[in-house]
Image (tube, rainbow, N blue to C red; front, side, top):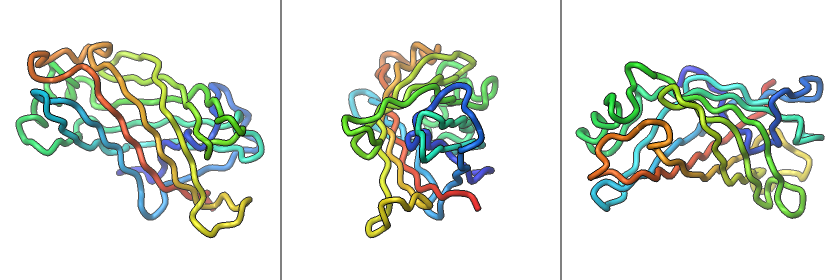
Length: 195
C-alpha cells in the first residue's frame, strides 16, 4: 500500500461535494485494511485480495452527511489463492489490468441505520470505476469504536463494508462457463484520525 489512507466512507455519510470545514482526515491504523473478494469458480467459492493505492477519507463527526471518501486500488496486484485464477483475473477478458490498472470508488451518500448511527448498520452508496466503466454500487456498512473507548472518542475506528457486484456490468465477461457473475466484496479496516 502506497498510501496509508483508506476507504472508510462507511464511517461517514458521504456526499459528492462536501464542506471541508468540519471534516477530519482519517488514515489507516496499525492493522491496516483487508479488501477481500469472493467468487464462484466452477461452483466452488474462491477468494482473493487487492491492495489500496491511494485514498482520501474525510469524516465530519458532527454531521456524517458532510463526509467523503475517494479510493483507488491497484488491480495489477490482485491475487487469488490459485495462480491460474490470478492470471485469468488480470487478463483482458476479466479485469484487463494492463489497460486499466486502477479501480476507483468515490462515495456519494450514506443512509444511516434505524437509530441514526452507522454502528446500527448503514448503507454506503457511490460510484465504482472498473475496467474504465463506472457504475453505482452499495455497501452495507458498520463502524465501531474499540472496546472500552469513551462514547465520544472517535480517534480510532473499525469499519466493515459488505457488498456485491455483477462483473459483467463492467465488461469483465471472461470465462462465463467457469466463473459466476456475482462477486462479493468484503472490506475490513482500522482507521485513525490524522494528527
